[in-house]
Length: 344
Ligand code: SF4
Image (cartoon, rainbow, N blue to C red; front, side):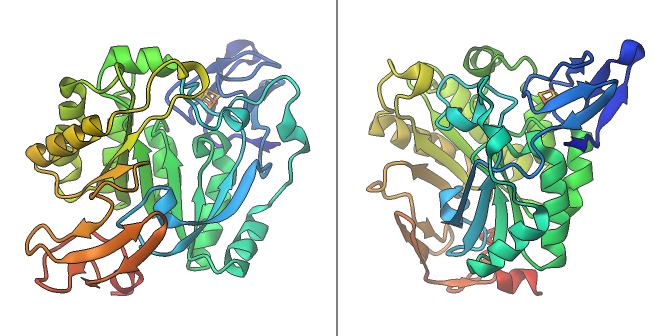
C-alpha cells in the first residue's frame, strides 16, 4: 500500500483521485473504477505498489515502438487492473482481477530490483506495459526516477487517460509515450469502454510531446464495424498530422476476435491497406500495419530518397541506414530516438 500522490480530501471522509481522467470520488472503504486505489479512513492508497503480473525482456518493437531505440530490449513489467474495461481486452485476466484478487499473492518487484533486473537482462530501458501503467502510478513514478539515474530509457504503454497533473508529475522522467487512440468518436469510446470524455487523451498526448518532449507513437487497433469507418480513421490520421506532426508513427493493427467481441471477424487485410492509404493521404510519413507480418509496411523507408532505413521481420530488426535521427543516405529527419541522438 502506498499513499496516492494525486488525491483530494472531500467532506465525509470521501476522497477524489486525480490520477486518471475518471477523477473518481471514493467513499470510505471503497475503491475507484480501476479497483487499485482505495479510500482507507479518508486517505487514498494505491494497493498494488510493486505487485507484478508479468515480466519479460521484450524487443522494443513489441510495444510497438518503431522509431525509439530500434533493436533494443526493454525490460517490460506489468501490474494489475485498468481504468478501461474494453470489450476486446487481450489481457483481461490481469486488467480485471476478480474477487479472488490474484494480485494479492503476486511477486513483488521493488523499483530498485526492476533496475537491477533490467541491467541483468541487458535491457536498455524499462517499459510499463501489459496493463495500464497509470493505475500503479506511484510505482511507475518511483521506478522511472530511478531508471533515469541509471541511464535507462523509460516507456509508458498506455491508453492515455492519465490526468494532465499526473503527466506533469511523471513527465520529467519519461522518454516515450506509446498511446492508443482507439477511435475518434464519442459513441465509439462509450461503446468500447464506457469512456465519457475521451478527448482528454488527445490533450495529454500533446502535452507529452510539447511540454515533456517525449517520443510519441500512436496505435489504433481496427475493429470491424466499430472504428473502421473513414470518418474515424481520417479523424485520427489528421489529428496526428496536425497536432503531433507528420513524422509521428501511426500503427494500424489487425483485430482478432477476443473476450466480449469474439463474434466479430478479424480485420480484413484490405481494411488495413485502406487505413494505410488514409494515413498517407493525411500526410503522415510513417504508417505501419501490425499483426500481419507479411504486409510491406513493417519496414521504415526514407520518405525523401526511398532508402530502406530499418528492416523488420517479426521482432527481428536491422538498422540499415540511420545516422542519429536522420537518413544516412540523404540526411532527411526521420524522427528516431537512438543512443547516438540522445548523446548529442
Ligand atoms: S486511477 Fe483509478 S481510482 Fe483513480 S481516477 Fe482513475 S479509475 Fe479512478
